[in-house]
Length: 396
View 1 (cartoon, rainbow, N blue to C red):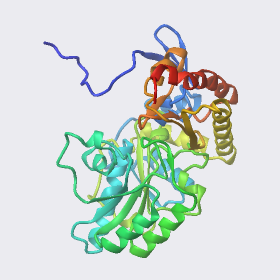
View 2 (view 1 turned 90 degrees about the vertical axis):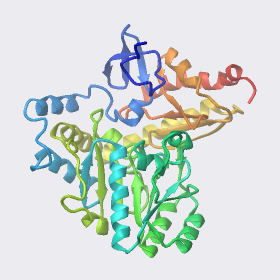
View 3 (view 1 turned 135 degrees about the horizontal axis):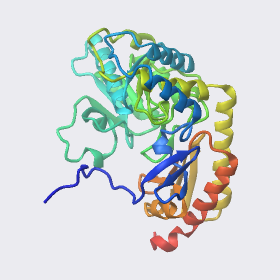
View 4 (view 1 turned 180 degrees about the vertical axis):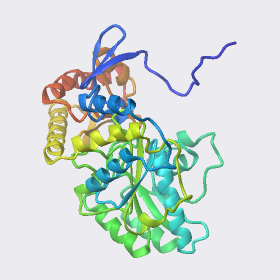
């Protein structure tokens, strides 16, 4: 028997897209779809953005790759733009969020060894998602993605998300901890936000016990929550910051940023990547940062996010099976009281792309350029489907 050419790793939906424009995708028959998930938060500036297209075409005609044996001009420019946007000190470029988190974990271990810890531990959170490499799937709080890949990587300690008391207890009782890694707003875990003021208190705890505060902003970064990085909603700066997804607007790129004592841990030979920070991806990333990192654009994202959340709350008011609408900026979840994975296919049929995470949470990550008119069109499709879901799903 001849197997399909592609490994069976995805439960793909029965549609193929051939073209995109702004917040819409078009399939082989020419049907238009509102993109409410933007490639899982990747297409921050939408599809076929003119400035991104121009930058990619220009760079492709000049230089694609030289390797990191040499200075890469676009890489230096993007590093400086990210430093300005974040307040961090320096950047290591990778090709994905998982690779960026691997770099962060290596920084944590180097920090621990410098402190004389034989087996440094990183505290990670329940319901977290950090990637699918062996170290990052171990760091993730999702047993489904870990199953079958044992033995997992040692050196991780798990805590409840947003529970400062639990972290205090770990700090008092585990002298092997070198760092804590968490998402400031969980994505795959169900669009779970941290309590207000939590990051500031965690910063104090990390300073007290000499832990690195490491934030996974793979999904929350690059303007997604209405600040360039989500941690900027509070007066805090992390030691390590990871981002990816929206940074390349579709081209694979990840970044691990460091600050203070973490910024000098890596020295030549300690870490590397053949493709990381290649000129093409960095050219696209530079357009993304320069377009999004303005007060006007970030304010627009925040305002449009509020408009979308308020629209969901108003239209879904009174529906007993809708537990909560939550999120920040244009990273929004609608939690139901029952599994709702079937909504994805129903929305697709109506011309809307969205997905469901944590079994019961409708996740919306539209392009950051979405207009209020397109938000209304999204709501016109999605809200009736959610309201009618109990009739399709049966009793809770």
